[in-house]
Length: 69
Image 1: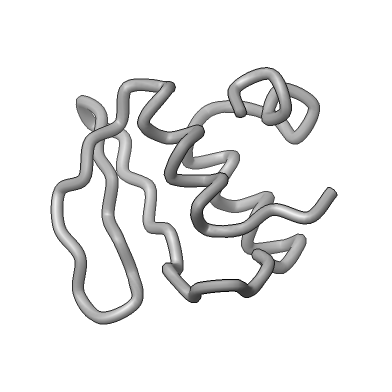
Image 2: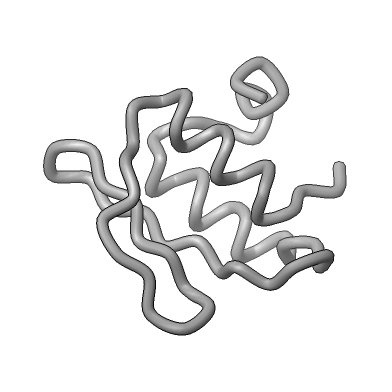
């Protein structure tokens, strides 16, 4: 599954995360004590290990991602 930064932002906002700040190409989303850093590189897909780490930070699995999108 190809996932872009736009997809991850959509998933994060649907899960209740809000944009806290952005510095350069990294956007930081927060929800309570959870923090998710999303690399904002337009048109580029997120690498598998990076995606796994971001999903872990969000508290969901790769199988749950399509349901959130």
